[in-house]
Image (cartoon, rainbow, N blue to C red; front, side, top):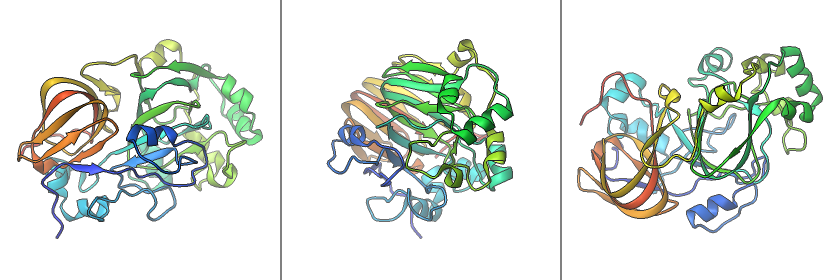
Length: 341
């Protein structure tokens, strides 16, 4: 039986090819890697999730050559901890992506857990949070109430001007973070580069596909048809005051991203100057800037530098971070009982 490694795991890039929108150069630059930057706009980090409808594409392969999904199934307690395993089984409850929008993404939504379970037989919906590495504009939520008929007409006719015109347009800057609850219409603007923390599913319902390299009527509604899929949309008008509850502007120091998403996943930003100790647990570290070192309670170590993504199994214990750096720590939701080793 495979056992969880007793050290932090450095994860290389994992960029599914030939996506329907452009991007990828900012991911390669962030990671200091060479390679194609054409239509590889996503890097799936520590992924036990596949692209919707595919058997293998999207899964993370560990440096040993074993898939992370299979490794966790072999030793879920070592990877995830006893309390996580008791509550969630071998489900990591987590997917992290680097996303480089080489062009504006189409307007789309993600279903809730309840909708995904009822209509798709899925174990998760797709709540997500974004940490902005390089800013720009995003469309987020309707600015007024939109009727079901109105939305259906816009989607059927691909009336993109009407769709975008009914949405809020926000400027986001490096250091901002945004919680995107299930059902909320959104579109990331060209040039925006984010770290995306989400539930581990690949489920998007397209409201727009005109001009993109995808057959929207066929592939944009998760195989359940537009009429049913569009019922997952949050059509109510969001005021700016309501939207502000989803945003953190220029977050620095130590702060939690998307606290509202705690039942789905956890993520925090940390600025380290000297030394800090993090509790044990399955987590994904994304190093944003600076340099340092990670030392686990069991004595294993990893060098920390910009662009690295590091997976920490639960079994290596508490993590001591030293140096001058900033990072994101992305984690599953907290179980009902605090875990221990």
